[in-house]
Image (cartoon, rainbow, N blue to C red; front, side):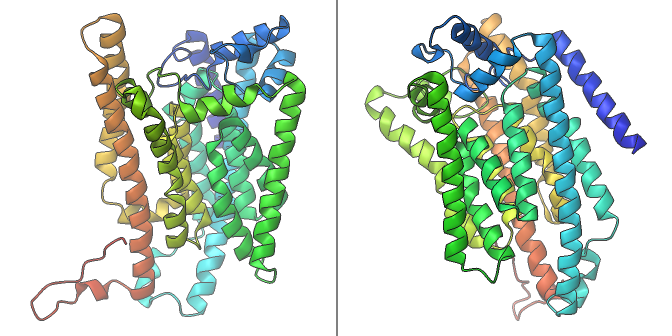
Length: 431
């Protein structure tokens, strides 16, 4: 308890110092057209002046965020505490996810061992009772002291609230709480659209947790509940705005990518170089790219909805149209949930070096390009590519670690040590 209090205190102090320094509010790696605090305050000012913030090209937040911050005010000193409290609440929810997952893992492996599903050689791979303490603490540390999360909170981006909704969703997912999961997922979807993909792992989890109920009934109920909550949010938004103009300014903006402000994603540079004649085709290609991963991953890992959800959160952080460090920070903070896969991951050192190098070099390249005029967009985009590649390596390494561990749990270690007549050993491949 005392250690948790110290951790939370340090997290608050670090965030307040960063807010006071104003180091991240205008950084392109942290603040995007979709989550910028300065754009939100400008929209609130227009709304309070009786003007529609959606009539221009600056404001792209949701009407609910507009209404909430119109009431709470635009004071940075006051609002910064709201964002910090949001971060602390997200951390608390993630630690609860860790507790639940650790306990479920212990129960699951005990049942599998008693049923003879685990090979005797796999005993060293089983989780221990201490994991119920270590996993929640690692999750708290990886979130509160994550530099990407600190930067996102200090920049007062709306990604803080998206992460809060996703943390709530993950807790609802592992506890099979259907109503809360649909509410939190609808809020996250309402905020940034892409989390709608997480409805697939939610349906898989609910079907597995209710074996006596028809899978079709469970899926249809979940979809109906999710769409009902999302529709209610959209109707409330139309009531706030007085019309449906926000749809184009918020979701149309996400899908069509009209503003090519540099960020840590891959859209901005590609469409800067794109001829207008091909733009619509490649916008559809880029947006559908993310959707294409859902089906194969769901088929490969149908019994691991948490791993599937984490993977989708990581892919969204890479392939969304306006990504920020806060998106990647959440994905990285979830990795302690899969600490048992670390011995089977082969590229952790390379990935760590790539993320560290791009985190340091991105602000330098931006300074050289924008302020010193001694570099160009190619330098900054090259760092973006390495940064995105590191995340892809991490996701594939995580998935391969799961496949490899599952193989060892079922067949043991000695199977891959046996040589055939030609003196060659079997090779485990991810398919």
